[in-house]
Image 1 (cartoon, one colour):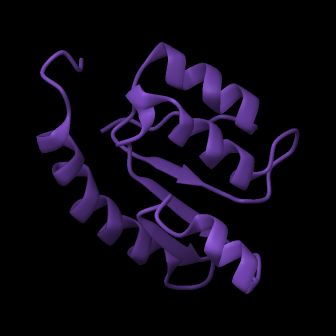
Image 2 (cartoon, rainbow, N blue to C red; image 1 turned 90 degrees about the vertical axis):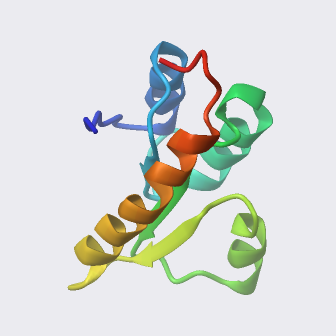
Amino acid sequence: MHGHAAENGRVGLERLNEALPDAILLDLMMPEMDGFEFIARVRAESRWRRIPIIVVTAKTLTADDRARLNGQVQRLVHKGECSGKAVLAALDELVPRYARRASPDRP
């Protein structure tokens, strides 16, 4: 698994057009397009719907924020001293599952 960074949501969407990732690690607080809008755009595109999204954020989420994320992301990890381990555990669980569900024509 290789990682590619995108400095904002617009660039992230462009990268998705170039190649499908095994998973998306997403910060909700991004310039140009916040993480909520990015998630909505990813889930609106049929070929991107099954890509696991792991949100890693320091933002204190409101009930409305959680409702917006419900069913749209596979994991929510709060930034902190254990967040790296939590992200790795989520990747270990979700990426193999995504690979099994991916279509045969996926590169």
